[in-house]
Length: 210
Image (cartoon, rainbow, N blue to C red; front, side):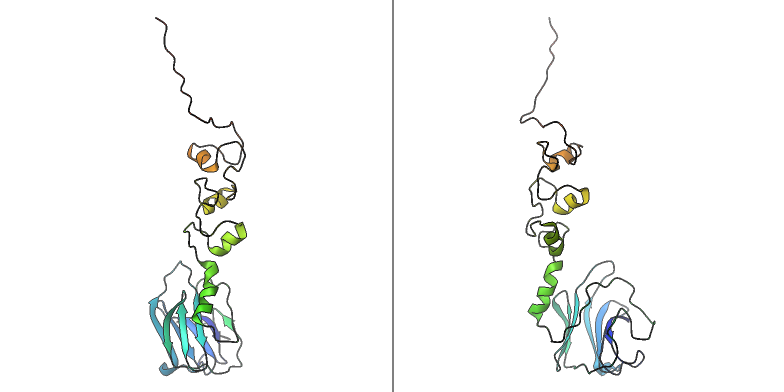
């Protein structure tokens, strides 16, 4: 196992509190109040490497539930016990055994048991409903529309514009009369104003004299 979040007074016996962990094969598990099998809760869904997931452990005093990306991964009649141990992220208190090998972001501990709807609301900022590579939180920061992959309609996705340094809210960042997507397609720099693109194509024909 690899601990994700823990609060227990003894790193070896887990006699109290809780430990939220991942098993060697990637399943999510939790221990509540004891190290023995009767106090373990393990889900069947597996988490992969090199990808982010939202994980939550909820105990209301009677039932313990593990959520993976807002969906119930495992649930059983288990209750966590009070613990004098510290709240630890990515390991067990006083132990370096099997530390979490990866990133953990925005770890939280709530005093009340959250409902599934409340957990889904926590997940909302990290969703990408328009599939443009920016989650809702990043879209809010950039001021772009989370329901549109290309907010300004210039043919470049919002994430592509942020990567290039163009303005995802302005179709023509450099103001030269040609939108950013068209400039990229013909090999021009959308950050440097050039000649204004003609409104219609011009064809020059040379006919030799007879």
